[in-house]
Image 1 (cartoon, rainbow over the protein chains, first blue to last red):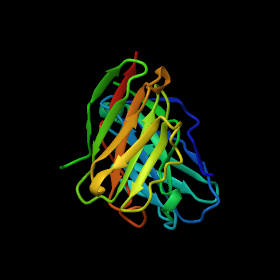
Image 2 (cartoon, each protein chain N blue to C red; image 1 turned 60 degrees about the horizontal axis):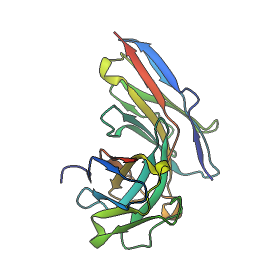
Image 3 (tube, chains in turn blue, orange; image 1 turned 30 degrees about the vertical axis):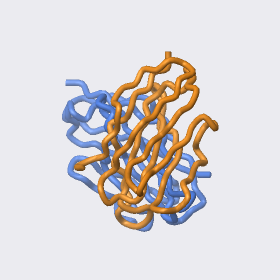
Length: 117
Length: 116
């Protein structure tokens, strides 16, 4: 079974600085998707960024980028120029590309990010 | 609708009562998921539906939990004889398809269930 591990329960960053959130996963599959979701106090889970395992290029969305290391099964999220609105819980998630009984998203336990003004 | 809609937003119930939680997915999305998020924890998969296929119920914690999806759209999660350990936020998500490029799940705001 696949697992997702986020080893940092809490992180803190100064406004305008850069922070990296860690995520590792375990799978025997070669084709899958990885996601980072943000959950502010409103509870709404918001997709931040996604990565297809077959793509070597790291995904980027504005201030958010990932460092995808397939061999190491690592998928870290970098937030540049941190803003107060970035404060939230961040969840790393895995999904098999094959669907069927493996179609559900598997989440890590999350990292709570605080942004200091 | 524009997004995934869940109701009620909050529900307080007495131990032993049954509750129904509703999820209205994004129109056209064939996959629908239910997750449970206990206080300070990650998301625990409960069940998902894909089109007309039999649902994957492998995450349901006990036979007190059941879910239906009528007409391939609205879903209802039912918890019978609620227990205090059922207190959590129940999140619903939908996606356009299960595999391929358009697989990202869009979440509702959840239902916070409190069993007293």
